[in-house]
Length: 226
Ligand SMILES: NC(=O)c1ccc[n+]([C@@H]2O[C@H](COP(=O)([O-])OP(=O)(O)OC[C@H]3O[C@@H](n4cnc5c(N)ncnc54)[C@H](OP(=O)(O)O)[C@@H]3O)[C@@H](O)[C@H]2O)c1
Image (cartoon, rainbow, N blue to C red; front, top):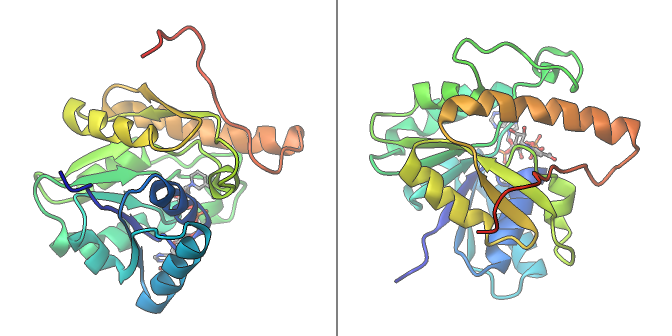
């Protein structure tokens, strides 16, 4: 069976590019999206330089959505709604949208170690409120460092809590296994995203206090081997 393409909206940024590199390295086709197609094409070239033979293409965000059954939203929290509204018409039933955003207080000019209150409860639940009916939203990858994703020669060493409805959640958990060192942890329903997103603010504080510029990750102990 042909491998499913993974689209990354805002894939020109630090985190999106890191995921593009890792999925491309694992042999998955990747569609990098941007508001400007030239930026996406440039990012795709950057991936091919580091991963020769990578199946990666640059699109504008709407075309990237049309190209893939799984779409990762990789823009700063404050641009979540605008980005989704711009591509909403291209989203279709059965697609999975992965929410990776964190409502950090930086969105209103405050610090990255504090969170904003979101009426829906979390960025992921906001995304779920904005996508058309039949599109499934899964929360994942908020606690993975962009720096570690981009350093292809080393495993990432981080747990990824994946939350959402069972079927799409399991499909996204399978994606984590494509990246050396990432382990998917079953995070249950989408409502748990508010807990996972908050961990990011804590991790950013840990990065500062322990001077870990590459980014601290999380590991859960005591889980059975799967
Ligand atoms: N950086 C990390 O270590 C890290 C770790 C975990 C999770 N995350 C999450 O991953 C997501 C992306 O983070 P990032 O660090 O990669 O962000 P970023 O580099 O600041 O931005 C990502 C992309 O968002 C797009 N963008 C910027 N301004 C926009 C606007 N006004 N409207 C629409 N799109 C805009 C840009 O793409 P174009 O200009 O090409 O459209 C940009 O390349 C965030 O939700 C963040 O919370 C980041």
